[in-house]
Image (cartoon, rainbow, N blue to C red; front, side, top):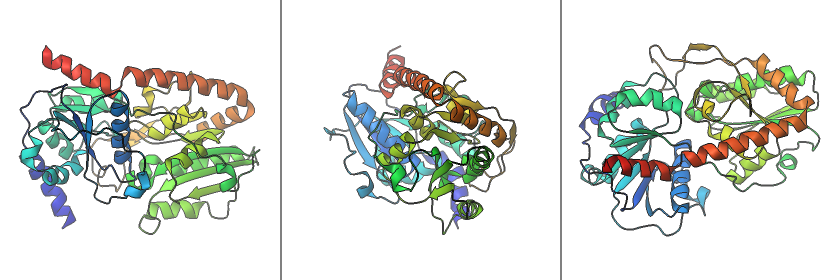
Length: 392
């Protein structure tokens, strides 16, 4: 039944949703629609958007269309001064497979009463048929990176504008090393990932392999990975945990941690290691940069917008065919992603380990670059650009 529904959604429902004929109106409030009370990446994307627009004085409203809401997880994040006025535009922080349910929940007639902007985060150069079918009903599309823009722009006549996630130097929890039994003098390597967004794409096994190569020369090193996912339901996550069983230097945490906890973990790390096969943006990489932690990253996809050899340690990677059972990535003919080398990543870890002060200087350069990049490509500037397009 699930397979039939996905087929009908992709090839029928997506085609039936009408496109709004309204022009963008910058004087009316902006409604942010998304999984606002869920601990998932698209939920965090929506929350970051709401916070950024509220901070610059834009009048906004919120619409939570969460499928599994967990409001207690995000107490205190909601911006103040929310509008009850009908919006002139909406930003949908939902990828196309999530949209039909949300649009039907809000009402198709209601959908056409505003200028609709899709915020689409896609991680490959080949775009699925369902995404292509969804392009016709969005008046504009925001994307998190130039990598995603190049994939999406050929599929629509609507404006496609790069708007990276507005990462900030958020609050941190102190004492995270002590919490997980990591010595203050240990060389701590960290990685944060969600198994639900394709564990193969996040590629944590390569992180383990790189760390083990490095740790052979640095016996005091520790790897701590924070994984989001259900161990009882996710075979890939179970296999990863089983692969490090008995290795006291590698810890995989699946406990629910607050954003401040995660930021605290990243800040107290000596290096952040992401050997992703592909990212639409690379939120945790950007968060690590904002926390002044030296970053080692795959030299491909969305992270390339703010990671370069002057500010991060890049792992050059050959591109290989995508092989994955995740429904978003399975069966995409011609799709490729990166295959970063654990050996090359281990060499970068050695560089950071041997010259920590030089590494911190490089991390400061990364943060300065990221701050400039985010300021130049903000939500507010994207909305102003849409207003200019409408006026011309």
